Image 1: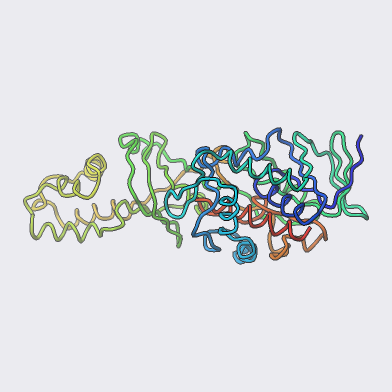
Image 2: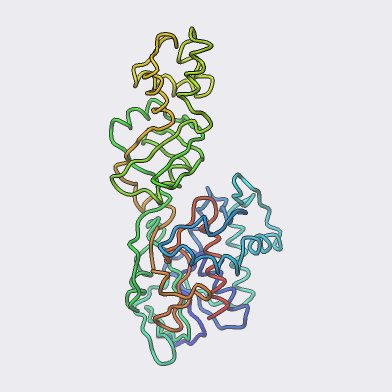
Length: 394
C-alpha cells in the first residue's frame, strides 16, 4: 500500500476536474487527479457528436438553472468563455461556430483531450485512472483518501465527479455521497437535456411525420425556447425539446407553437376575406411542411375551400398550430440525458472559491453542483469556469 501526500486531490478527471488540476498545478501546487474510469475525459470525447461543443459565445448567468441562480455569476466572470477560447486558439485548435454561438472543434473532441493532457503533463499533475476509492475521511492535516492500493493525504479535496447522466460511461452517485458525508444537502437530481416520452396517440401522429423538422417555440410555464423541433418514430425530439426538458415537471403540459412567426387564426381570416376560394391545405402548405398540414387537417377534420370553413374552425386550426398542448409521459432518463439537473446545494458553498462553507478545504465543481446549463456549450463553460476558480484557491 503506497502512502502519498499532496497539496490537493481532485476526484473526477472530466472537464471540471482536469481544469481544476491544471490551474492549481500551474500555481505550483502538488496535485493528484483521480478517476474510477479507465479513460480520461470520456464525456468530452463523446460530446457534440464527437466534435465537443466546448463553449458558447453568448454564455452568461441566464443560461443556467439552479435553485440559487446567482451562484454561477462569480465563476463565469472570473474565467470567461473568452478565456477558454483564447486557450484553444493558443494551441492552434481549429474551431467553428455552428449556430446560436455554439463553438465546436473542426476536427475532433480529441483535440480538447490532447490539450488538457498536455497541460496536465506540463505542470506535473499526477493522473491516476481506474482508481477505486474506498474511503474519504477528514483528518487533522486535511483529508485522507484510501483507494485499493494507496493511502493519500491532502490539504484540499475537490469533488469533480459529475452527476448521474450517461451511466454507461461511469456516472455514479459518488459526489453526492461525499457531499452528504460532510453534511451538505442535495437538491434532488433529475435528468436534464433529455428526450421526452409520449403516449401512444401522439406517437402514432409523430410516426406519420417521422424525419420532418421545423423551427418551433416550446413553452413550459414561463420558460420558452425557439429552436429545431424534430418528429421521430419515438415522438418529439430536437434541440427545443432537449432545452425544455430541463424545466418540464412531471404530468404537466407543454405548449408548442409550430409557426411562431405567424398568428395562424389571423392569417387565415385575412386569406378568407381575399382568397376564399383557395383550399385550406394549399394555403397552409405555403408556410408549413405539406405532410404536417395534411396531418393537422386530417386530425381536426377540417378541409375544403376557405369559403366553406367557419371562423370557429379557423380558430381550431390556429390553436392546433400556435397552441398545441402536449403532455409528456416522462423522460428517457439518465441513460440518454446530457446533464443532471440538481446536485450539491450551492447555498452551502462560496461562489467566489467553490469551497464548502461547512468543511474548510473541501471544494465542489462542475456537474455535481446544482448548476445546469442550457444546450449549446454552456455546461462545458461551467466546468471550465468552476474548475479554474477552485484551482486558484486550493
